[in-house]
Image 1 (cartoon, rainbow, N blue to C red):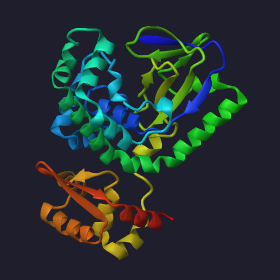
Image 2: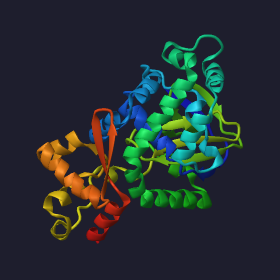
Image 3: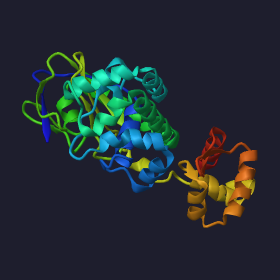
Image 4: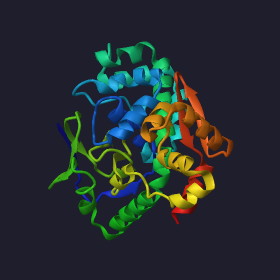
Length: 324
């Protein structure tokens, strides 16, 4: 299914670095079954990390064939500039439940919403908190990846800027995603909102994401701008593990097992995931984690029955030192 965004003159391009759309794309890929190329390792890590209320909140997004959703999913639109994930989560917590109900009516019409959104309409405050918690859980897993993507994001800002100055937006817009086509009259965009939209004199805001190669998130209804979120070029290089540090030198400092453990924590993992990945007995793993925690190189957080392990900023700096 396609929507057409007609572009009658050279569009005014802007760019927004708003990681909340990365979290949303990853959430729908990992939990809502809308697979858009996110690697399975990251899908499993995100699914394991999100709590039960978060899983419940994401269910409306998994309705077969229906991708349209209320604007409340993005309370701070990227048309207003860059927004942090923390700002988005705070906005969701502050949004009154009745505002979500009104938003559902604007999206789906008055009366009872579609079946997959009825639970949210009946308990809107609970849904908003669950969704905010899900975004926070996704971000706690993927924030290290976002930090490593900074050079890619900076390069994309430069690329969009050069394109804007040189007046060749059709070359850029026709190549930001395989699911977006730049035709004679404008853009063909994927999604359920069938019909024709006029860009007119509105701005066109591009939002690079860290997401699967086929992920696209759209905002077509804002009176001041249209926004398109798409995978930042080069993102596929980040799904692989980063260049390993010089293990001989790192091993001399912290020991070979702990050096391997730090390298394995490219993303937060549970103790059971680590034990399987490293092929080490749980008792031995606990011992080494205790030593790394004492050195402020990892954090441990209990969530339900699982204990999650993550590298600290101090550990990231240490690994970077030995990669040079």
